[in-house]
Image (cartoon, rainbow, N blue to C red):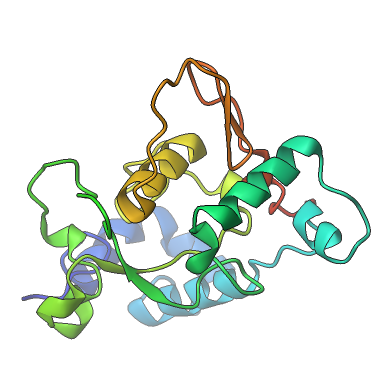
Length: 204
């Protein structure tokens, strides 16, 4: 199996695709050769190190500085009760382990998986790693749409509903009935996700 890079096939293809739009930007950012594989890798690493979320409502709640709202409290309780916390744990609320996408049910909704769905198998070549991905951190999750490895979940509400079903086997029949799920209030549609949005930093 060939190792693919961001659906571009390989590094040369990716760099040639991005270079027309970003060559000058990389040069201005301090990379003498502009956009190269090395500068791209370095810039991603720099960006990831900047993804800190100081003073989010979640942090302030954990430090005892503020209480959750009733919606956030209900959502957080359900987050723990049905099992989301099993994978989304630690200081980053995830990001520290790998898990199969679709533990309980088919994560691909019956479609035939493509190479981009293979996950860690693309790196290791091991069949056991097929459909295995790093569990993402939920910090700043409200501002990082779309979701999943292929961007197939357009909204946070879509992602939460899908993961509840395929990872935990949790279905919510009778959607028109008002029901709390992770701070999501269901009344014919999903209106909000306050427990998850509380993990978003207030830093500009």
